[in-house]
Each structure stands twice: as C-alpha cells, then as structure tokens.
Image (cartoon, rainbow, N blue to C red):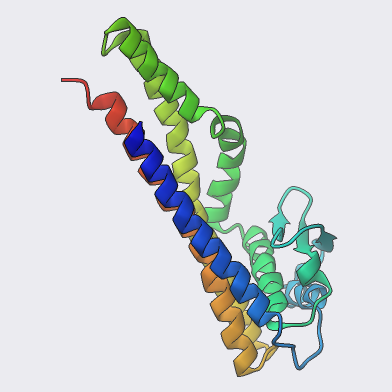
Length: 233
C-alpha cells in the first residue's frame, strides 16, 4: 500500500502544480483586454451563430473555471469570470466550450463515445477502487489467490478500466475543442496577435490538466492490476 500512497501523492502533486499554473495563466491573460470589447458570452454566441448553431443557449454558472458544455440541455455554461469579462482568457474559454457545441452538432465521434460512457463511469468510478481493495483483502484473508475474492477484484478492475478509458477518450475531445476555438478566433479576426497568443497558451495549460488526469488513471489501474494478478502463478 505504501507504493500506492506514493503514486497517488505524486500524481496529486503534479495535478496541483498544473492546476495552479492554469489559474496563474488565466489570471495573467485576464489582464489582456480584447480590442473588440466583446464579452465571453458575446464571443460564445457569435461562434455558435457562425457555425449555424441556434438551439444552444449561453448561460452563466457560479464559480471559477467551472465552464462546460452540457449536451443534454444544449447549454454553454460560462463561469462568472468568463461570461461578462472582456479579455483573452475569457475569449479562449468561451470559444473552447463552443467548440464542444460544434462537436455535438457535427456528431464528432470522440464526443459521442465519451457521452455513451458517462452513465457507466458516473456509477462505477467512485466505487471501483474499494471493490478491487475488497477483493484483494478477501483473497488475503482466505489465503486463496482465486475464487470469489479474485472475481470481485477483477470486476473492480474492469470498472476502473472504464474510468481510465473515459479519461483517455476525453483527451482528443478537449484538444479538438481547443483547436476549433483557436482556428475560429484567428480566421474571424476576433483577437489580435497578442490576444491570440494568450488564448492559445491558456488553452494549452487547460488541456494539460486532462492529460495529468488520464496518466493518473492509467497509473492507478496498472498498480491495482499488478496487485491482483502479481500474486498469481
């Protein structure tokens, strides 16, 4: 278990560092005011209209960096620091979330795959580690490397595998949304070169948070997989 705690600690540290850097970048580029004077909400609405999307609403949501696109009710949810602000960071985030709306409208395959996994992952992700641990504990208590304990542990690993798969499917979804956002911002001349550079840098750091999460999920899956199968001949 000590190795597991070290692994989780290392991943948590890297995640914290990346998250702090993202917040720092967001704060920095929040000081780069847009020459066109448009707010994040106005940027989002224009991007949606430019892609022929008129059934998606742009709304404000509480919190910081809580921005997201909800495909169920077709809403682009922008945080308080994005919705009404008129800076490079707000433009980047607003356009990125609209990138997801465009993916949805165009039936982007990776987004479709991720959406199908959401119901499964929402149920399994919170309990998978405990099920694996319970199976291993039962194997240790009975002194049997197979049987019901092993079966329970494998079920937990399968559940954990869905969460890991979800994390990796999320990567192309997020990177593609950022790409769509940056292409649109540049082609439509929505931002100056300085503003574009800030938006690009902010989105790169946002994407890295998902990369760290995916690597962490894979590392955890491999660790528990070794614990379950490592003791079997």
